[in-house]
Image (cartoon, rainbow, N blue to C red; front, side, top):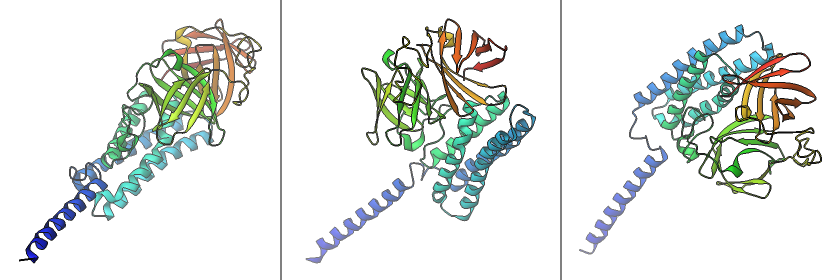
Length: 363
């Protein structure tokens, strides 16, 4: 008789341990572990493969027809797309060799990582509409794949960041946004506390963010007091000189100022010329001229052009940063003056000295 209670206890202990073990396995395999079959996951991968094949073929054809780009640029862009397709090929090979579809999670992460450069390239550079539509289709397939494996996906296209970001809204140009307060709007300057990398960040009225970090452009969103840039979430608060960004995950703080006083690595003269970015008078540009624009220089270099509400200009030209000012319809960058006029999709810059025209459009 004395052994019976012990047996019942042992039985319930074993049952409890079994339930705990099964629950742990389900949790470890993600929320779709018992939702998708292996065949369904295989079909998701196949959709991404098909989209990738079409996109790479059409992308290569457009590169061959683009005479404004150098061969090195074409090779770089084609290699970005090739790495994405090759990562999908490796995923398929690994998936076919394993019984459990969840074992391919690392390969799915590789696909997302290999696609990041393509996503940035397609957001920044001007391409034909049919190619942009194909990329949106491929990006959606990759994000569906990432979501299936509880991984954050690619920013853009309304993607919500998967299981890793934990924030409602991916990155610019998609994702959930809200209108920031007036003190959080405009262009701010600072440096990374990790390695001193220069940061130029613009928060637009519609909550979309463009950040230039060490010469590389990235995108994000503002939503109810937080910013999300490439999956990194930070709360922003007002300071005497601009804003303070405090990351949610590790507490990292970045001070961002409305003026670049030289300590931030720019050419701001500290206000000796009446608050001029890089010297010269400034005036507030019209609303249609404010914000972030994209275009191509006559030599094929890609341009990311930002004009703040205070009349300060930041231009990323082929990866090199330049700074200037706006004054009564004219911009001055590195001593070159251009008149700007409104177009249907953005602005047109016309140089005063040689008549050179550059079309810049919003995304």
